[in-house]
Amino acid sequence: MALQREDICERVRLVSQPILESLRLELVDIEYKRSGRDAILRLFIDKEGGVTLDDCAVFSSELSAVLDVEDFIPCEYSLEVSSPGLDRPLKSAADYERFKGRLIKIRTYEPFQDDAGNKRKTFLGHLEGLKDGNVIMKLTEGQAASIPLERVAKANLDFEF
Image (cartoon, rainbow, N blue to C red; front, side, top):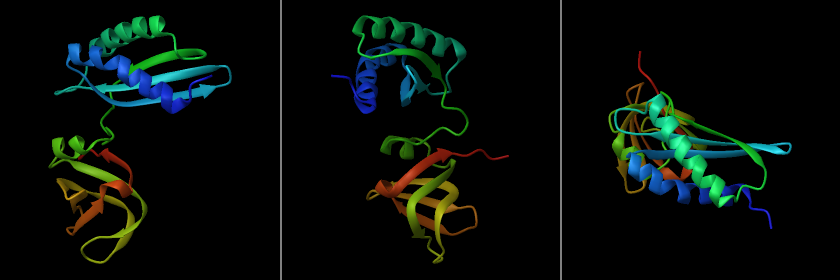
């Protein structure tokens, strides 16, 4: 029985964890996309102070060796490892604590009101953290917003010029 995309990502997450820990890296995200008979497996890694090209190369080499032995991906694939970039996604509750004070952009599944009564699905502002399962932000226009974490469709760091 062929593994589903979610199962492959979860198995990759599990086999990569010891490597990540030994290299003091953090797994930000995994993407697995099929394209015809082939596939692309992308892992985004990070560490305090940012990852280097050498970090990506070492992790890729070690993970590739483990994936060759485990051999659970049912087709030919390309392995890509990179940093999450300047617009790093916020994926876990810990990310919302770690990046307090940073400018972020959030898109929600449905419109929410900010504290001035404006309904919107896109919020840009400085992250104040998580409180009772809600992302607390000070929006760039001056008002505040409290967005339920489970209603966040996408959240990324944004960069200030």
